[in-house]
Length: 227
Image 1 (tube, rainbow, N blue to C red):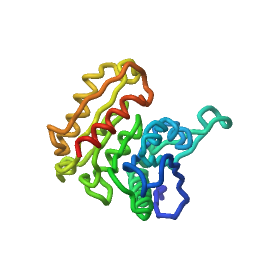
Image 2: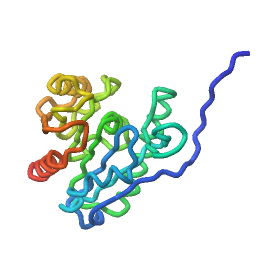
Image 3: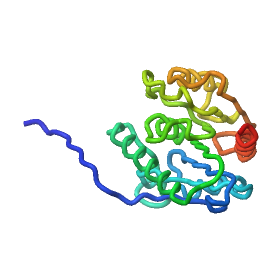
């Protein structure tokens, strides 16, 4: 008899980090989803400028932790791998939904912005499409140094009422051979999921595969001024 895979759901402990003023006193809440091999503890520090300017920053951590090299030393986290990917997607969408509900218990004020960096871009956009809350519950979406995933829903008008999508890329990012081609690819995935064509803004900065503080601050200021 051939081996057969089985699945069942279990409760588990998830971790997230925050920075900035409490939600009730903040300009808004900025959710930041890290890239492959990063930990939320250190990733959240990249948004200290946002925290200092009045944003409540929430940095969830992917559920897959591993040693970055060998079997000891520095630890990183990821959101998923190709192995059993659909179950992993379901799990992190459920985690992020539960986290947002948990944060909302504090009655946050102001804008709600979702930012993904690198692998976190695909995570953020899948959450936007598959999560409990509709896309219009956000005031802005930021895809920083990553591409939109090709598996976004194509037949459910997933993003028809979505807010503006901000695409940020470094001009010297080693993972991006052609920045403009990357922008066009992400915009195509956005349009295929019925995202508004007039709500895509491109931003570049003179740097590599890193979080650019100035670009993020510019986007956040633009979101605040547009609302």
